[in-house]
Length: 152
Image 1 (cartoon, rainbow, N blue to C red):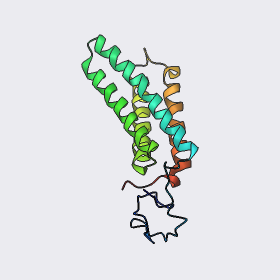
Image 2: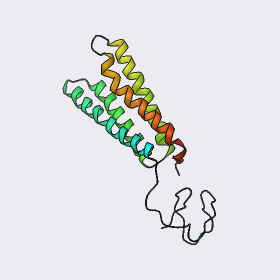
Image 3: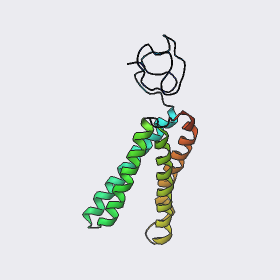
């Protein structure tokens, strides 16, 4: 099935215009595109988010082992949060960028609050990896934002 070269939406063969974005199509332009083109920054950001989900899953298992159900549920939430953002970024959707930025902000606030409230157990060095990942996520999304599409 051919796709629009502008927006990537499926079109029926022989259409002169894309039914979604209205781009004029020539026979040569209505070609089959097998994959979504996404910039390197968005691809890297999606992979970072998938990587960020792993420590949350490991922490969740640890907290379940210690019997701390509330914290394990929070870790599960963050793991799902990171996975969903990574999935939508992998699909090059703007909603993935919004979810990823929200994930970065919320986990940064959580890391800083751990430092403030549990400073006897948590040090600045404990949260540096989280903060650096979150800053990288935000920068990568900002760089690739114009290439993301609205969900259809």
